[in-house]
Image (tube, rainbow, N blue to C red; front, top):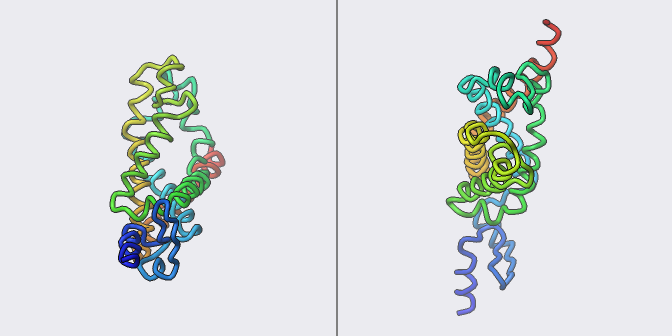
Length: 213
């Protein structure tokens, strides 16, 4: 009977065999039931996926929402650098660092996020609430921003609703699916190529364009 109960408790916890207050660790059983992602795997894949999705979504939003004009005129010009600023072009080069930070959190929650079929949804809700809507600072798109800044509601939310939430969704789905399917080589190549293109485009925009001028 005890053995049967133990077996049932391992269902849903295929990597570490931990169940609530029992706290059992069955490493041999855990390893035989499926792939357990390592710290390096989760952090590295999070950095690559974030850089790739940041580049794709950001480039699409740049043209769709005419950021060149929005950031140089109107209320956003008071806080945003113009798109011609070298720091804006250098933005993608900093994204692997942000991706690593996301990966650290995902790793600490790995036994919760990656064992559930809808773990990507939990990940996205977590990012959306803690990272966008309910920030501690008065950031555009956040509740604090609506309370403490002078921006209109449309200025605060029109861009973040599509671009920022969309990129957080792609990050969540991408990391979740890639970590859960390490055997799919097309994911290795696809995300890595887009992340590489993001870095190359950033380098070109940062160093080559000023030289041309």
